[in-house]
Image (cartoon, rainbow, N blue to C red; front, side, top):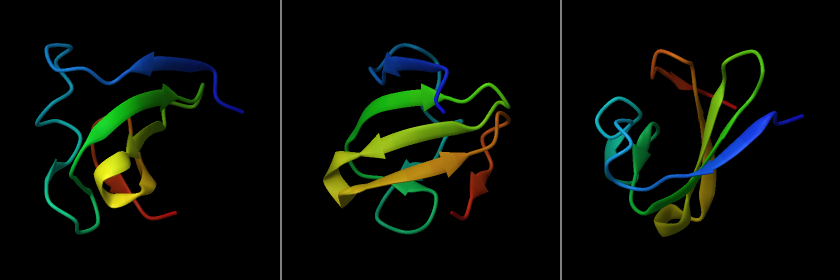
Length: 64
């Protein structure tokens, strides 16, 4: 269950920490939303690549 959902907008400081530009694992093309699970997992909705990617709280890509 996701504990918190916030918009993934520029200026919130997550850019560069969670993913880079592109279409590979851990890369984002058009991130639109972020959800944070209580355990610290960060889920990023990547609209440009039509997927959701999971990262650790420190920003490391986590395979689903």
